[in-house]
Picture (cartoon, helix red, strand yellow):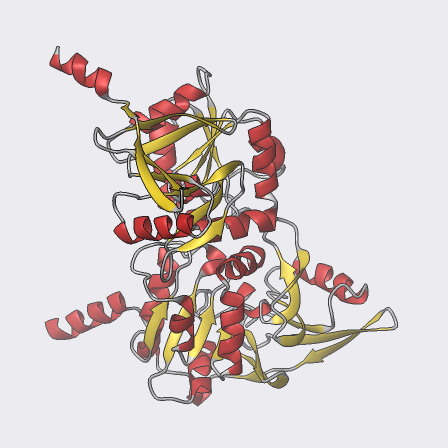
Length: 251
Length: 230
């Protein structure tokens, strides 16, 4: 996802619902990895509130020491999907490598576990992306499971796109996609299957360098939503649900 | 930053020899947790010039150091590293070159201190207990020894540390909660504590056997208690 999903505003429930649909099981086991933001409590709470009623949710903290007796590999491989939050791509990759999580995620991918994420959590799967971890945007290498590079927030963070285009033109990053907020790429193996959007007007851009020149192609995504949009009740937090239940009782 | 017990904080501030020391807090091991940063300012803002480094929220404002991090760190009297995961700490530091910056600050005479992961990181080798059984980790190696923290609180970690030293890990110290080691360059000057019973323990292999010897540990609160009694 080029941005969007439950941690963003608006939340793009259609993108989160698509992640769950890709699991193709009734009550998928979904693991949230908030490493790129330093495991903030609010993000973890939002994850459980968003997915808790239709999934078996777990989060994996690489900072908090409590209640983490299970080996990482067991935790990750025992899932249907891994959902990676946004934040600092540079920090996230370095920390994953320090814990050996990069190898575990590769194993998960090879086993068919759905790997999803937004922003840093989307770019990480590709050969490269653009990080803002140090302030100004910089090209950075990703895990390289998926061919090509990815740039995110193409509409929301305009500083990133020119840096990515120049890196692709100069050959420092392979060609790839730039996605607006609310746009998702669905890849099966290393093949792009669908380009989807949860927001009307959001698009993706395919860019390749040919002989030192950039060749750009605008992709019109398939708009998610309409009858496929999950009813609003399915994506509200626990507190809101409790509040609504109370209100119903009072009537 | 022990709750309600400033003795170790007072001790490290005293080591700077500065009237109003410049202290920089590095909370990387906690993922730059906001509540931890707040605790740091509460503990020190009254008696020191405080700042903190964020490797996760650098572009997000929040009052963390911006711009040239190296110059900022070199200009400190004290760098205080918070607890959390030592593996995550070292990974993030290396990605940003903070490991090299801290090495330079140390050579320049900036006092470096920290607790838990913020203690382990300075040593050549350390024991971490995170996601599964305790494991051996290579730290920055400013101190060419090994270190194990929460020595009294986590028996599994203590046992594993002995096994690791037996298997060839550098000799070093196991340190109870509330105890601290004070080094000048690479020499241990003394062990001190904020709790009367907390100790440091020398752990080394002697003649093929691991021995654990308690290090005389000076309780920092003794004088105060005498004063109260008088």
